[in-house]
Image (cartoon, rainbow, N blue to C red; front, side, top):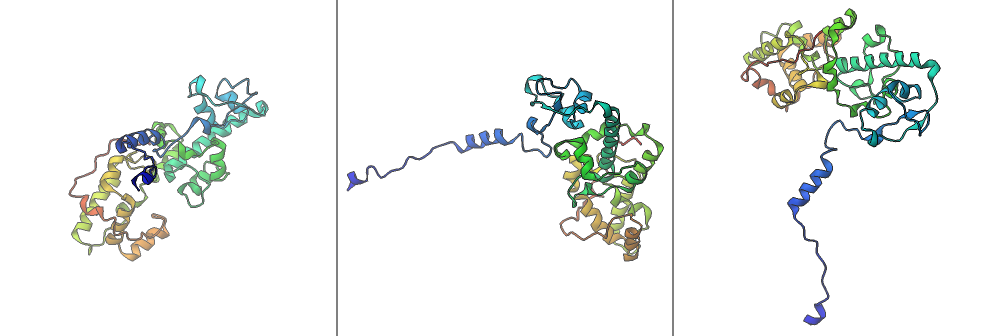
Length: 296
């Protein structure tokens, strides 16, 4: 019987599970980021495949989107993707460049006012056009068309923290004034500076409201702006907006909250989230120190 079973075996794979983990880490670490762009994502056009563009202007002339062109020239020569032949748009190139510059401004304003890139997802934050962009800056295209005009790939693949380098203080007074009225990530601070806290609110609620009001009265800061929010703030305060929403429900009367919504001080009545009561720890942890000021 034993001899009959000698060949009744299988070959097992024996491996080091920790070594496997290390190898898999090496494979996925480069895609384990929120903002990821590969060389193959770029679509670049030139005169023909044998004559790649010499600069961003020439790439634009043949139909390359701005970000595709800019990032193409950030890649070492021997790693750049193949160039496709494009239609020569030299006759309208000045208008194309001016239009692209306007679109870049609108995109930057989206980040400041919505905290997100313009998007074609109707449920996304960047799907609706801020009234200021439409009425004052002349934005006459959809967010989807704006995004498509600037990149052949999803703009969300570009880390938005570059917005820190924009010197808003030299822009038109109308733009600076609008930014000063409210930035993405700051809207839920407004009730604490516009309304008196309900005197019947518990003492810890009133203390937390004073803590929030002190932050709201400081100059705007990139650490709070939605698209550049500091990881330290995310770690310390968890779901910041939901906590502020919980605090609003406790600090103000129904009549006050309804008026906030009617006047668009807040977009909608907050919905209580029992997981987001971190406001109870804010006062004890001390005032928030902000040192990444947005110069308006």
